[in-house]
Length: 50
Image (cartoon, rainbow, N blue to C red; front, side, top):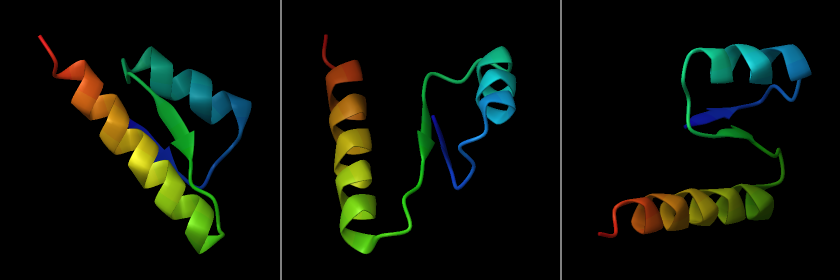
């Protein structure tokens, strides 16, 4: 999982070429950032379920 400030297409492609499972551009707004963190937590929770 990549959490970055870059939303450039080339950065996304490079990340997936390195084998990342997800790419999230970090928002500048604090409330949006908290929502992104909750989404990441939900992703990892679901991914770890049997």
